[in-house]
Amino acid sequence: MIGHIFVFLLFLINKTHSLINEAPQFLGTYLLRKTNDLSIQDKYTYLLLNENNSIKLRTIIQKGVFATKISRTGFMHFNKNHKTILNPFYFVIMHKKLNNVMFDNDVDITVNFNNIDKYSYSMFGIQFPEIKYKENPKYYIKKKLRVKQKDYTLFVTDENTMFYYIFDLSKNFDTKKLPYIETPVNTLIFTQIFSFIANILLAKFLDII
Image (cartoon, rainbow, N blue to C red; front, side, top):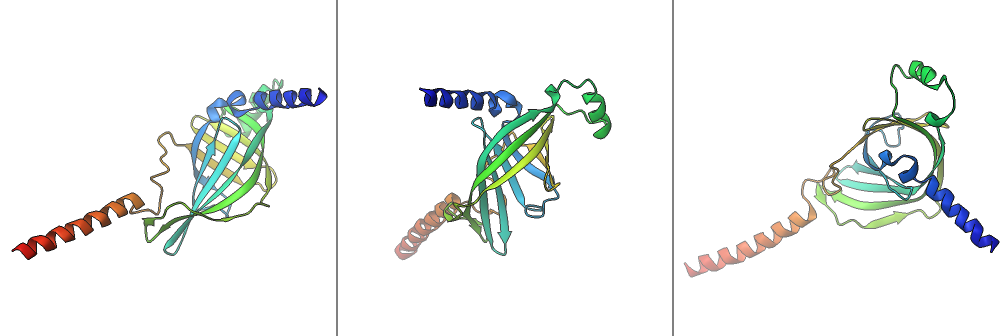
């Protein structure tokens, strides 16, 4: 009985501190615009925030003729909403510190990345079927982050490393139209089949003549 009550309380806590309840305006897909984190600097990176508090950070890297997609997945937990703190000087202090930028939202979160996978992506600009070729089941990274939102932009800072990340919401994001791909695999297959059929028909036509 006690166990069932405990599970029910955890469920309520999770629901209360879920992204859809705490900050539904954060939901969506974001493109990384700027960071001082060398591990993903100058690389194509996008972030997916979902209703169930799951988080996905994906980075596409091209080395030579090959491109690889690295996907980190995990969960996040809300720790504190700074704008709900009963501090009459909060807005005055933050207004001075942030160079006259007043953020719409300002929260502390903990992110636990517990999985990392690497996928085939492209070669010579030709898209590969997405095949997972490497995973690390022991991967685990815990980060304490402060996330400030202004309009459609997220300003994320890592309390431990002092890294910052600036993400912009992408309303029309299409995972099928990503960089380093000149020829989608479906287009390539169709082109090859069409060329094969055209060559057969042309050969028969020339044979008749």
